[in-house]
Length: 552
Image (cartoon, rainbow, N blue to C red; front, side, top):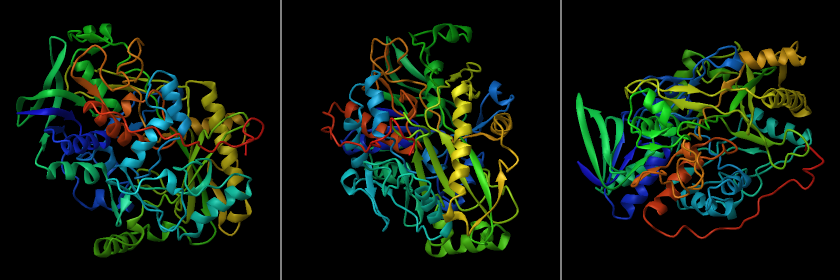
């Protein structure tokens, strides 16, 4: 089997690449280990906790015991299904702050500044304000990716935004517009009451051209001959096969699997590869390094009125939600229930937001287990720019073995300070007048958890990944020894090979990573096709005028 381009991974960036390359008349083979994305557990937004906890759809990765979290192993879900993690995620859509991308550019990823990436965010979007305001000049309206907002009918959802305002924070109608900072409505990749994954937005139209072939199998290595990638070897139908690339091989297999595949192919830290008996074809010490993620805590409150989603938290309620959705794509099942959000700064002197909130009108965990038997609500809160860094490395040279994933969560004193700040600020928000008609007792951390030592104990036991791993094939200048790909996503030291997914992020962006991952696929496609990048748009982001002296 042969095509112009062989893409490994039918996830967020891989699907975008397939669409743009076939749109340009090129032939593409997409290799995906996972199966179909059909079925209500994936397509119903309200069922989001199910697919990310199902072996059928998830690689099932875990971190190694985390030394700063008492040896806990944290889940690291990655989509093993058509659409990748865009088919199992929470459907939250956040571009990132403009200054995130300026930082990329300043650290060697030239051509990836905010002005450079904004046109690609616009190109990919089909944005629907849904009657909740917005910033149309910053948004796209005719792209393949539908982005919408929930009904925001639940009074708790509106109370959260009002409480933020009462606490002295900014409000924003569009955190994906000029003004990220503040409290306001949340964007989601939902359309017509269904999940609008990268597979639906990009892969389906790519396959409809007849120029995109989807091949199921486990990619085992990139075939590299005389310094050039010529294809991908994979396991399928009980044997080995090779898909040949006439032009290029592109890895879009996630921040976990892309560095793993590079290392299995002989591209990575030389000593590590040699220790596993792998011939070193390109000694790139940065492969698998620079691993980053967002951590978060759930600050949960009991509700004094029966206004939360707990009323559906029984067999009859879940059946009713499911029937409403199946019949008309309406009701609670048509929303991911993340309908209000906030981005704030932790202290004076921080130039742009470094804390994110997801608000949810029920007290529940990502695994779908209720934290308390009764009505409640919660804020997912966590710092955005942790200094902690980890790594992905090989467990063995067997491609069927999961890699070693070591995040080194909470390895800096700043991490602990930031999380304590998150808890204090969240408690203050929940204490505002807007929540008084609804707020009961604090479920967790609990009113008796007050001292730094008590807060640190709670953090150590309860902090969870927000499932935003990135950075393991860092993009940078070609003469940067720690960079893995150059600013056109080309693997340094190997011809005809690129990486285009969240692994190339130099530094993690503010918020959820699905949107910037898709943007990477969109922009990389133009580089691959040899096209001039879209013209930069020098739109200025809103920065708090008193950021140097005021926290809000």
